Length: 220
Image 1 (cartoon, rainbow, N blue to C red):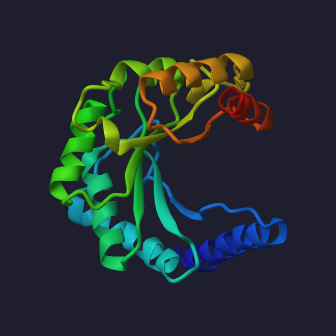
Image 2 (cartoon, rainbow, N blue to C red):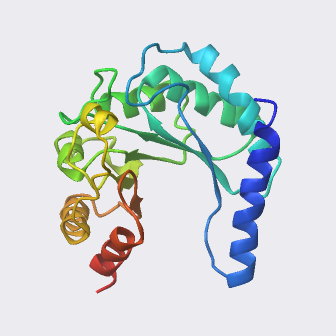
């Protein structure tokens, strides 16, 4: 934890250098991860505990030129809510990205919709938007309902290339990179149902080939 502020600032400085050197109009997001193992969450913090734990890094990010904070691979509502609280206290925009198991539910057992609605209700809708990451589109799709009231708040997906479950990925000795073109097709089908999905990328097992295929799928 002692090195966290220095490492965080260096990470933002690296992205600033890339943006300035290549004149790329991109948003710089400071990434916040879950406490513990997102694949095997053994304990769940309370909302207040999560706010206190994540405040240290979020305050550092708020003091950099980063445009926002994104919390990735979250497994439960209290931690997500505490992160939003910490971001609001620091005066920085925040994105909440949950992960789901093969059944489309969070590792905590909550449905994606229930989790988003709970965070929205408990934080007065402070989050900029929501995402799903670290799951294959085949696992994400069952959780999505285009007619749900929370649907417009879901704006991004960073999917795994592999269709394996979290438990299987955790035990795998060889990285499953899946099929880039198949993954891009899956993204296209998700976008047809959810046209508001504008933040697209890759998570476990993906590399430049997957990102390129996804980009081509939406650029024509």
